[in-house]
Image 1: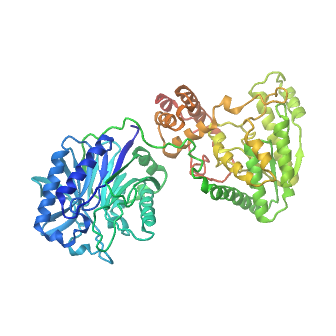
Image 2 (image 1 turned 90 degrees about the horizontal axis):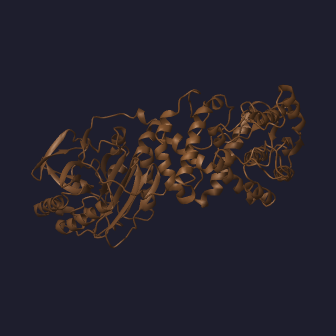
Image 3 (image 1 turned 180 degrees about the vertical axis):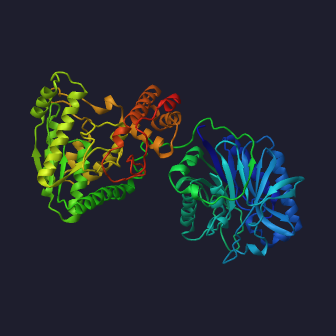
Length: 630
């Protein structure tokens, strides 16, 4: 389903040194995972014996009981497509190895030994086990079959899934084996672990798993020993985590007294393409690996994953202050550098009472505050025209007065009428010419005023408008520094709302946030806005969603449509989503010529459309292949 796979981490109730009893718990969890349409489920380290069996690993009785228990699992799962990764002790060449056995449909696909053995403080694994880090291109006779054996094994379904396995301490090593696995294509890493509980260790463990999933650009499923392990000197909490590219998707309850199974739907297709665009991943050194083909995996019938409808907006409200401070500081420092380098002391901003010019003004004011510059050197210009309403103009004026900036007014009505006459345009014909004449008049005024005042024209257009090309070429498309160029519309609303903590401007900002988005270029109706942008080009929350998924990792439009349905639920019908997604694709392709010559501006989030930063695209590229997916 569009590259999604359901992954699970299982923590079985353990009985030390009783493989037969442990196998029963494992079989029950594998069957539960299969019923839940799980593709891969990972169990804790030394699953069938218990990690804390210690010198009992030297007992032949335990070893053979373990092998019998594993055979019983194979027999019980012959018709189960779910891949299970189970921890066992394995005897080979007179050495005992701590291993992970990968099974599917009652067969062993391969066995991976542990590379790094802890031998410090409460751990002394080298007493029983040998490192398998040098075992490559090997096989082993095990349970009446010749099985691939080594640290060079990957497992693939021939589609998106490529599975790699590491064991506990391997992750804690300076160079985890999963680094090499990921360099060779593994996008799902599972870890069988026995990590005991200490004060603060669970937080560090989460940081480690999340960090490795981010570093390797992969999904990472981790399962650690829990209830039933010996508490002679340590306690095991049964921690289990599933992460994807630095995000925690699911976590088990630690110290649970029963077996647990957690699952999450990971987007392996997204990870594959993120590796192309998000890092120097392709510079990673490749090693020779053996890729084992797996059988058909369970198919997810219904996605069980939260899809954020507003991917640019931070989801944690507790982080709002920090995130917004960060955004405004990026903008402010970008502007400070540009002005100080150019020896310019004044900023010129066209202020309309709309979202974009409001944020540009607030961030410019912040920059002046940080530098101790006189806010009266911020020249805010309101330029009323045919569509300007008293609501937007009054909000612009009140905000300028509250911030102590210099406010100027230049009415563009007469200028526009003279331009209509000069080019022979009918004043009553409200076409694109009617609109663009006004937009270019405003830009000309700002540029000329900046020359007169010795100032810098601050661009107010945002990332959403840049993506759609919703600007007038050489009109509001142009400025001397595009301060909002890296911020999409949904995030601009979020940041402006953050500024409402200032009681002196809060009522003004609240009204701006609730004003319909409009360029106000067409005549108003009894002082009411008649030209609402979102009724023309569609809801910005949809366009920001499309922008994020298409640009972030090159998602196909049919997948973006699927994700949008999941994210927005019943808010938009299928036809509405498809309508605006089609428009987004068309405008994104046809308006590239505007992006090719857009002014400088700071990148703020993970996506930029500047031709000097993230996005290089021919202005005459054809869109048909994208439209065909819909």
